[in-house]
Image 1 (cartoon, one colour):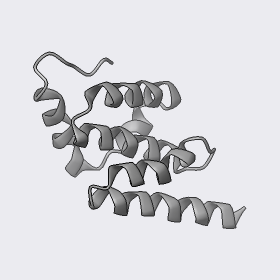
Image 2 (cartoon, one colour):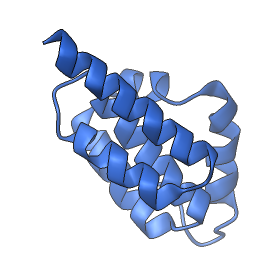
Image 3 (spheres, rainbow, N blue to C red):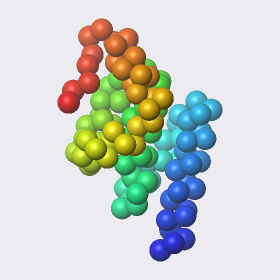
Image 4 (cartoon, one colour):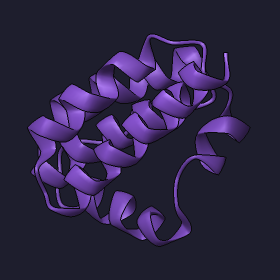
Length: 104
């Protein structure tokens, strides 16, 4: 319904606000339920959860999130959910870990 779609959008935007404030646990707690829905916000929410783990420097959890993302969405949807300004940040996060790599 329209109400459910509006609530999902508000929930996603609240999660983004928490991300901007670097309140990653709060962001994930708001975004995680969206990942289980069939709304248009499921993929962007999962991308944000992946990014939150990268920003915390937790590459193991980031890899788990990315694996879930990869099995849930196609590449076009994943790439379109990643803000252009964030792509360099993703590359840098993986480059800092000389032994780790994004398993794709």
